[in-house]
Amino acid sequence: MQEISRAQGPLTEGIRLYRLKRWDQALAALKAIDAESFNPDEQIELAYYLGLCYTKLERYDEALLYLEQVVTSGADPLRIYQCRMTLAYIYVITRRTRMAEFELRRLSTIGFESAQLYSTLAYASWAQKQYKQAVDYYEKALDLDADNANALNGLGYILVDEDMDLYRGLRCCRKAVDLRPQNGAYLDSLGWAYFKNGDLLEARTWLRRALDAAPEAPEIKEHFKIVTGAK
Image (cartoon, rainbow, N blue to C red; front, side):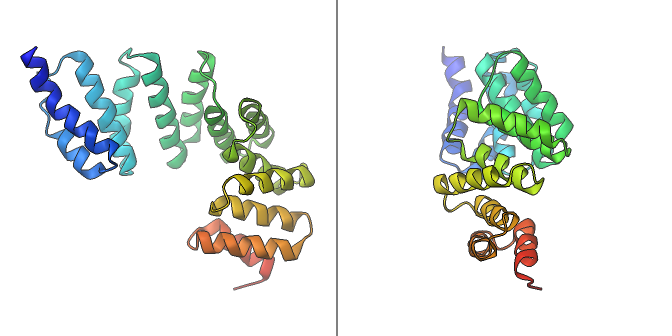
């Protein structure tokens, strides 16, 4: 019992720092641990939190190494689900969308379904220009959670940007903004939806709000330029 306590003490401190969102300090504490003194379960716990810390610090290649350890360890299903979702997120962020889709499909085939899973699959499909597939995934996300702002925004944007259903796309984008009124990406989608529906006044209004919320976002700046003629 004393040996387990000595092993768990530094790990517990690293987890505490992680939960306080002190990512750098948590990572330093976890990296200082001598993993050879841990039993296999503790080693997987350490790998899990190292992977999460590296993800939060946007050190994605290092995060992948540790998260893959957890996924291949045969750890409890919920922990593997969390790691596969994080892996998919990293692959989407780093534009490895086929890898993201692989991770998410693995989850869906073994019965893990969530609005987040289908929304991420939809984004991966959209990034590969598979627009109909993306719409289908967003629809599945909304079947599970009708008020999922991310799915509403994604679906709305595709419907208007690809001229699939301009009015429904506008309604989806408007609902996403109602749910998350400070989100710059959602404000941008709503402005773009108004533009695609021919309402330039509303388009300018919402795109200005989007630009105020996220002034460095290139897509927002591009939409604002198109709608207003700004240089």
